[in-house]
Length: 428
Image (cartoon, one colour):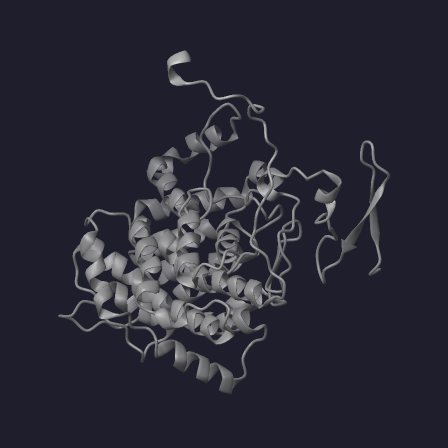
């Protein structure tokens, strides 16, 4: 099967043969990289049928509801593993041994602090600035403080940068939150887990002792796991595109954060909470359900269905169980959470939702969990970025580790004016 070819007939040319590449899973891929020599490009807006790279990190089968990280099913990772174990697997290809994991965790914890001078950067932001604006800025600024790991052609530099980003992103994310509410920054605690340390930096204050709730800690760790990577999505492709130019890793991750900020990408769980706010109370749900079914109404139920997963989101089952654990533990009295739970019940039983496979997705449940914990909606995408950093940096490393990588340069179908002569302004 290695010599499989596709035959393409072009106007005015003899038929040409294009190599067909096969991965370990998924569709076969027709290699069109030499097509330009025949005077043709392909046209694929949104890259719906274009493989931009080879990758061994994550595999998705949206029709079957499958998500694998390094071959491991996401359902098993979320229940049996931890976020830092997954980080190791994404970075190195295999789950760590006990010795490897202890060393990895120790190194990550040793780099959780950020340069003290970085705290002064926040003073340049308005207090009401969106946390994603701050996170994007300070992440890019890391390259001004950690100049000893910026040589992207040095494998050791790439590894150091990866550790630093995974270690410091929770600290930066918590600093964005603390600054926005006027509270002092809380230093990381290396005696806590990765998720526990983040919760401490988010909710602790200097004048009181803070104890991490283990159920909330596990829920946060699962949110990190379920958002760690998702193949060649918009933000990951952005990181790869920026990295292909040789840009430093901190700039590349800042570019990924900017891409993630878009409401069509990382803002889905935030949009879900805004929808719940629009519905307001349980008694108004039937009205909005009917609007969602009306093709002529612009209203859409956010947090249901998924662009990639046409059957069900494999992450949602784990997140659903975690969501109910958190709500049971906290016993939060919030009408919006009542709305969310009733919406979930309807979606899982209403024939309209079942026939169209509009099941609650991971964004629906993660948004509810974070609201119950007390995290404001403006921080939802920041936490998404925190979790996704390891996926971004893993793809960045993989790309640079591959021999013969090139700067990315998509082609276009030009539809502008043909060549014409310039006319001076007094004659126009």
